[in-house]
Image (cartoon, rainbow, N blue to C red; front, side):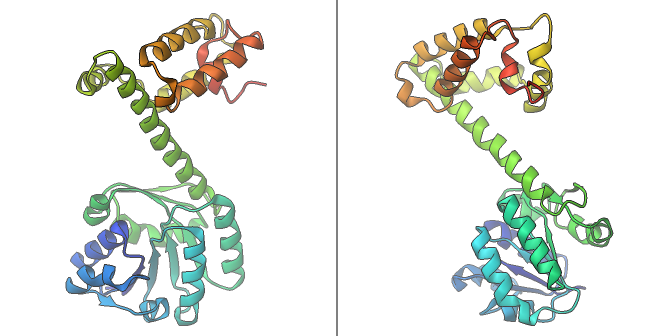
Length: 283
């Protein structure tokens, strides 16, 4: 079995390490606050005091860190102890531009760095479920996939562009954040008019427009004739939503949507389908 190093013992890193231990791998772990490594050490992992100690003898290194600065600092600290050809698989959510720069710099130094961010919660990493993104050289994806598939329910390879996984990950996180904010506005609006959040959730069990479906509708919407639901009519409904909610200061997204619609209508776009607000083909 490969010896595997996991650096970063937050909830995701801890879950990865425990799952790898369950599969019989010798696991070496490190965290800046060493006490966070204690539960994994008690489960059988070797707890290292430095990143360099953690990667000694490891055939694969997994990084699960908080930010780009931490990734760069940890890689610099562990590099003197890395074995030749050892893969560095970075699961951190990072800025795409910094991933591209890091990839080029480390590859020039002879290090096999790849970015593989995940859509997982702590339980997913513990149970090896969820989705892992990966981008980089195709031959390295082929070499790594069998190992990575034991850590996740699914590996989605996005091609050889080194920062593509970072770009897709930040897009996915944006969807999660904005959908959450949208639901917050709906809960606020519901509370203002006596509709409980349970009733709103029940509605979306029956009426469930998907992000992909709405995005597909938006493509080409500014040129579609006839429109399905005009900007003018949608803006009228947004006005009803704002009036129902009462204080606009309690809302996150709806006031911004109203302002964007007002600008579009002022530009003469009132008879376009409202989804043209998101039309990526609009000139």
